[in-house]
Amino acid sequence: MKTKPTFKCPANASLAVLALTLFDPSRAVAATDATAGKDIPFPIIERFENFGKEEGMPADKVHSVLKTTDGKLWVGTWNGLLVREEGTFRRFGPEDGLSHKMVLCLVEDTKTGDLWAGTMRGLNRVSGGRITSYLQTDSGLPNNVVYGVDMIDDTVCVATAAGAGALDTKTGAWKIYDHNNSVMHEPWCYAIKGAKDFVYIGVWGGGIIEHDPKSGSFKEYRDPDRDFHYDLVPDDGPINDITSWLTWEDGILWQGTYFGMSRYEGGTWKTWVETKSPLVSNFVQFVWPHRRVAWIGMDKGVSVTDGNYWVNYLVGEKGEGLIEIHRPSQPVEKRTMTTALANSFVLGIYVDDEEAWIATSKGLSRGIFTPKPKPATVAEVNK
Image (cartoon, rainbow, N blue to C red; front, side):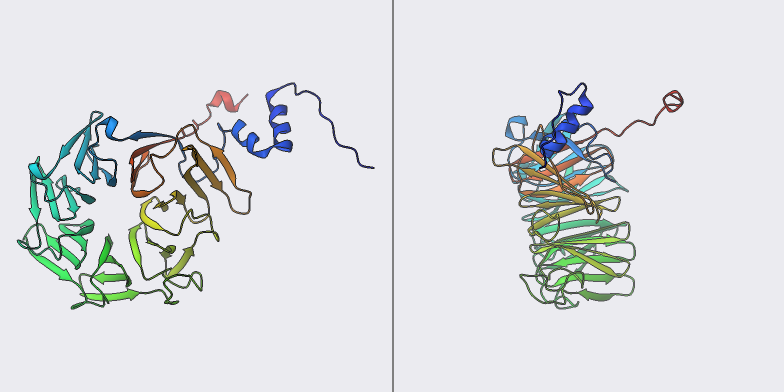
């Protein structure tokens, strides 16, 4: 007959952790928070700071966030454009020359320091404290609803509800690309991104368009399954024709859809869907790339991945912060955080080596990374 093992009262902390591991793995994880996730090849958020109306923001709903090269933080909200300087927010609205109070997207011209903001009614250039607006009726802007904006050399590229546009900032000339002069099947564009020799355009129901400005050529990437609801054959191309967002960095093209996400690198596609991967939700609204890692904003939180390791940030039923760490071929590590995202409905993200900023439907969150371990000194090595 088998007998149950007995344990003596632990004499030190390490034995206590061992006992917890045998009886309650989730408690063991909580006991080792200080070292958890050190093997993950990208930063992990240890806590959040949240900003809303109480912290001086004019609206809870935040659409976009961007830190510029001068260290300023710019925030696009439902009620104006904000800049955060020395810990306080300053607002720009229609009374300051902004074409519309609802700011959807942001990009910086790193050559001049100008900020470009796309809104629900026009494109805006913020330069030296002055705002210049570009509207469909008084410029070459394809449509006043600007969903995406990017800076490619001296050209501002926009994705609008009626095609993509390119403004040469030196000459003031516009070019428009839509279903009349390209391979687009429809003009409703959600995102645009420069990538070395190409410009990628995310089309609502038309997949991804690759444009070569030098040759003037266009190439189309469509979901081979041609099914709007399911990814019938994984890794065979873009996961869906409905492209809600796309971005590019370091040779990797990331596509977000409302039915999962995909990655394109070196001629090879990789797709992920909810329940069949660690991806939190198929409803992907935004992707921010940083050092070959994708930070993914969805309606249920944030997923971060390099394609192999995943970290998810969720909000529990009681408003508590939850973190999931997925390692290849290992059990999922789950923990409760001391703080939580402002809201799980994520609309925009900015990440650098120092911190993460996350725009949600109920406030702005700053993610503070777990400190990197300091290299051991010679004395410590020789102990």
